[in-house]
Image (tube, rainbow, N blue to C red; front, side, top):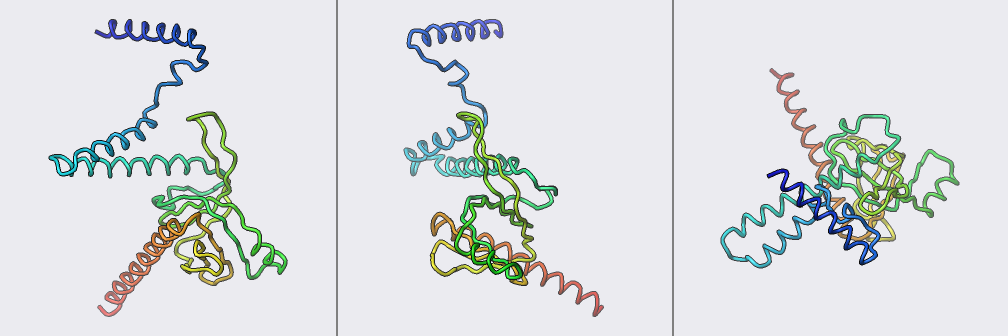
Amino acid sequence: YYKCSLNNFIKLCLCHQECQKKLEHKLGLDSYLLKPVQRITKYQLLLKEMIKYSKGCEGSVELQAALSSILGILKAVNDSMHLIAITGYEGNLGDLGRLLMQGSFSVWAEHKRGHVKVMELARFKPMQRHLFLHEKALLFCKRREESGEGYEKAPSYSFKQELSMAAIGITEHAKGDSKKFEIWSSSRDEVYTVQAVSEEVKTIWVTEIRKLLTGQLEACKGMDLVLGWFVNK
């Protein structure tokens, strides 16, 4: 069986090479083959088509569940590919908790204890930063030029700044643009004005950050109650 399959594959390759010469195509057979990670993107398209033509039919609920799972896997794969491209971070990224979101933003930094000129320049000239929101920290990175060709193209990120989620606050609306919001240190010595590409993206990020901060607050209250119980015991 395997010998037969191998012979068929060799014949297919030879046939493809012959057709390639006749049509004067420069790409080899391997250029038309999808890698496993690339096939995942095809699965979601197939499932969406199946859902489109099976509304109200038996199995439509299972198809929707399958699509949700595939989209979750796609996000995890995409996030991990960006995460492993970070350079210059000296700590362990695994200690920052789960990566929740990542994306590119324009960022203005204001350091209240810094030099006055630096503050003024920071207000008018934004930095282009790629943000990685983890459960325990927010990383600011600078995106570098993509390397490779075709499917091999991948960005790289130089680590620039880390903010602990336990020591920041957020202001949902910033002056001048509905796509902006502010992230500041608890002492407000550092204020970062972040501009998203759209109001929708801004809302998603603000909602996720608020969810994290609210969770931290509730965890602290719970710990205070436990400590209070032991003190009064």
